[in-house]
Image 1 (tube, rainbow, N blue to C red):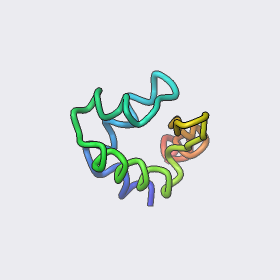
Image 2 (cartoon, rainbow, N blue to C red):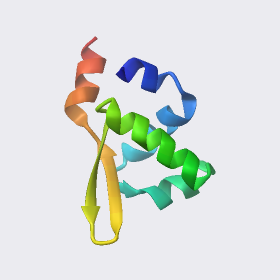
Image 3 (cartoon, one colour):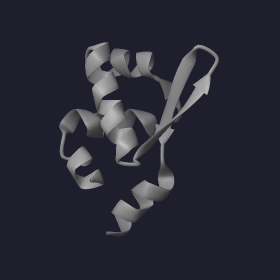
Image 4 (spheres, rainbow, N blue to C red):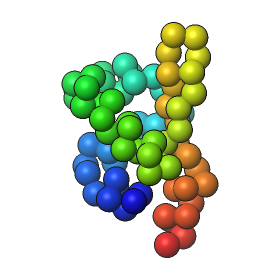
Length: 76
């Protein structure tokens, strides 16, 4: 569930970074000082819960917030 995803502090930190706009995973690794596998794991949970979306741009995958899902949580 999105609430379980938000319970983990690093996932909330990822969402905070993404509030500034779309970012590749490497930027999140640098910004949060978490290993690449750790960031990937957290992004997968956030994507599966509908809080983050990903799009492919050439060789990169770019991550952004999913505003509709976040609005549902905010309304709750």
